[in-house]
Image (cartoon, rainbow, N blue to C red; front, side):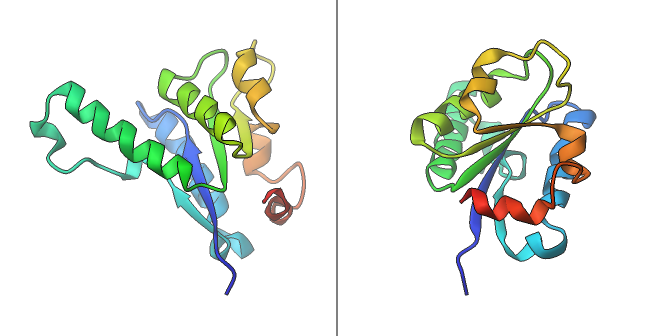
Length: 147
């Protein structure tokens, strides 16, 4: 059996709407023929053991280490980006993925907004979030060709 494509799913998850978009990305990759093709790493699924007992700095270092290691093992990144500025964590993840040479699909929640130029330039492909999720661009199974 062919190895699954490891996808790092970046994006903010500070409120319900942001978490809902991350879940939509998860559903997209876990449906149809794609479900057996991709292995997703979604940072909001991973917790630091005893994180509540750590200092904020120690907790942040542990999260940084976990996310960095996951990115280094990834074949591609899908990042949800909100308008002009998403959040510093997503921006950093995008830059690190770019530096590692990992293909990045940037899903913008509003392509008409004045999106921050750095994430847009770092991405290999930029799509409107909703149209991507609704498979309005292409037969989504062709995403396999990105690897």
